[in-house]
Every structure is written in structure tokens, then in C-alpha cells.
Image 1 (cartoon, rainbow, N blue to C red):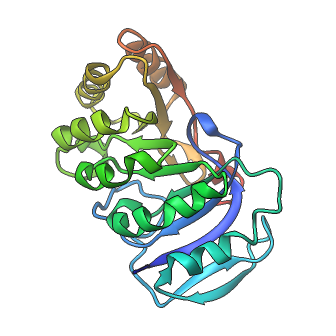
Image 2 (cartoon, helix red, strand yellow; image 1 turned 45 degrees about the vertical axis):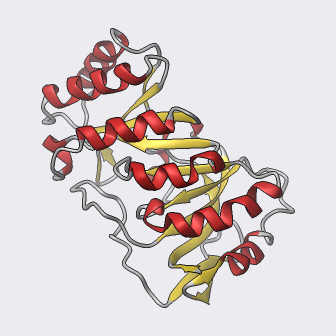
Length: 245
């Protein structure tokens, strides 16, 4: 079994409460959604995977796709001598579109004492259930219909978060000033209904390197969130500022 992977590189996490932690990023091709504010292409399957040869230098060698689990582990092991890695991030695209491959590969990763960090759009609960016991940290998006361009995903998000809460999970909601408050309120109710101790990250939409969420609105949203949840943070995308997409 093989997986189509767009790139493998080493950098710092640029979003959420693990901001600044050093990670290995495995960017999977393909996504089941198409959000208006997405900062990556849909990452269609290609015949080559780009592998960074020196962390932070953005210089790559090309590897043939699809990659086997064994082939991917051979590539990842080149990074392990560095003592500064916090975890390996499965990102995309949507990694859970290739859940069967993750189920095969993640045990080998965990055997090397690496934490598994899953970045996901939170819309594929059935596939999450296949790998939840192999994942240490879940960064779950809630896609608001008013700004994502996606249809309502409330029930799928609710099912997903209920499964994800078996691991360490935080929820990320992308916001800009025009986003309808009723969408945000519905998302708050959804998270609180699962566990009011789940960390919620309000992430401003980034346009041209600038936040599209005003300070006043950001503080208003945080105050709304703290009425229902114990931990609500406003965290912009640092990797955009660092040119480390």
C-alpha cells in the first residue's frame, strides 16, 4: 500500500497552541473540501514527492509517488538525529483521506518515540475512528458555512469531535470580520456540548500577509467563547509571516 504525499519538510508549527514547536511535516495530497481561505492548493496527486534535504533551507529532492510506509520511514529517519523535534505532523490536504495508509505507517513512527500530530478538517469521523488510537494530538478545524464556502458540516464535526476527544484535541475556527456571528455561536455550542475543557483557537483569516480579523472583533469573539469554554485563544498564522507554508 502506498500514499500520495506532496512534500516532507522540517519547520516550526505555525498555528494553534503548539505554535513554535519544531516538527516534521508530512503533507498528504488530496482534500475532500475546498475552502475559500485555504492557504494551500488542493494538492492533487502527483507522481513526485518533494523532500527537504536541509531543514529550513527549502531545497528539495524528488521522490516517486506513491510512497510505501517503509519508504516513508526511510525518508523520515534522516531527520531523527536532530534532538529538537516535538512531533511529526500529518497535514495536507486532508491526511484522513488516506487513513488506511496512516493505520499501516503510524505504528512504526510511534515505535521511534515520535508523537503523532494530526491536522484535519474534522469532516471524516469514520476515518478518524480507524486511527484514533495511534494519534497523540489532533488539530481539528470547524468549517463555518458562512466563510468557508463549504456546506453545513455540523453533525459530521460533532461526531468527529466526540471521537477526537479520546486523544488530546484542540479546535481551530478560522474567522474574519464578515463571518456571521450565528455560525461562531453554533460552533461554540458544538464544542461545549462535547467538552468545555477543549481548547478553542480563533485563527484570523490571513490575506496578503495581514489579518482580516480586526482586534475589536477578535476580542469580542474571545469573550463570547469564554462564556462557554475554559480556554479560548486568538492565534494568527505565524508561518505566513515566516514564509514557511
